[in-house]
Amino acid sequence: MDHETVKQMRGAKDLLQDGVDAAVTSIQKAQRGVVHRTYMIVAHVSHLDLPVQAIESVQQTITDSIYASIRLGAHAAGAAATLALDCLESRATDEEPIGTGLEQET
Image 1 (cartoon, rainbow, N blue to C red):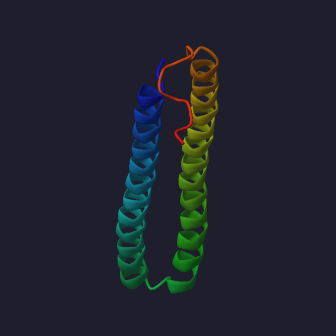
Image 2 (tube, one colour):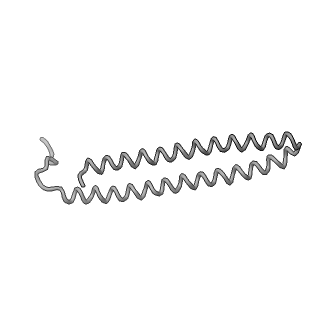
Image 3 (tube, rainbow, N blue to C red):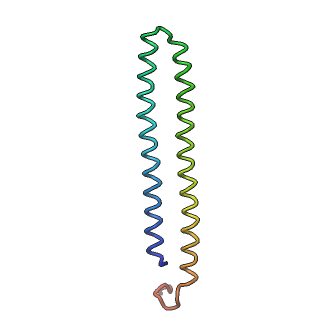
C-alpha cells in the first residue's frame, strides 16, 4: 500500500471520528432539551418541583454517562484504526523500492 493511500485513509478515519463525535454531541443536546422540557411540564402540573428535579438530575447524569461511553468507544476505535494505519505505513516504508524519488534532494 502506498503512502498516499494511507494518508487518504487517515483523513477518512479522522473525518469519520469527527462526524461521530459531532453527531453524538448534537443528539445528546437535543435529548437533554426534550427531557428537560418534559420534566418542567410534569413539575409544573403536579406541583412536585423538588422530586421531579431530583429525578431529572439522576436521569440526565445517566444519559450523559451513556453518551460519554459512546464517545469513548468511538475514540478507542479511532485509536485502533490509527495503530493499524501506522502498521500499514511502516510496512509500505519497508517495502519501498530504492530509487522511487524518496531520496533527499540537495
